[in-house]
Length: 138
View 1 (cartoon, rainbow, N blue to C red):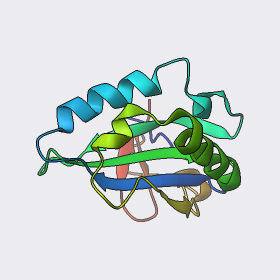
View 2: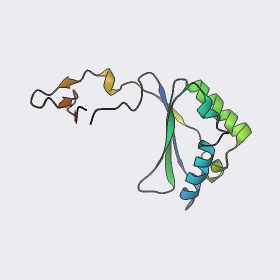
View 3: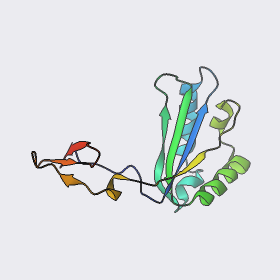
View 4: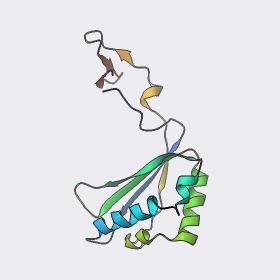
């Protein structure tokens, strides 16, 4: 398996860490997907969005979620997020417990491609990451 970059150095992740009302996790996912894949989602029309976000569910708590996406421009994401909250008001937001639905922004400061990868002399089908992680080359 080759190493595949999750993100690009210099871009930003938005990271939402939130809980939904008890027992409403499945309903939240359904409502979130309706908005996310709908025609009324301005996030997907922005050139500043690098990759579509991913919704992750805590494997130990079915009402705890993370939403992560890659953007080139934090201010553009913030502007659209405020527009969505003010004008569109997606139904899924009503299932989020108090504390709001506001992300933390994190700059991507290192990626695998920014570190030189060298081949493993004992097995030419593997590459060796400088910190010792190996993966077959495809």
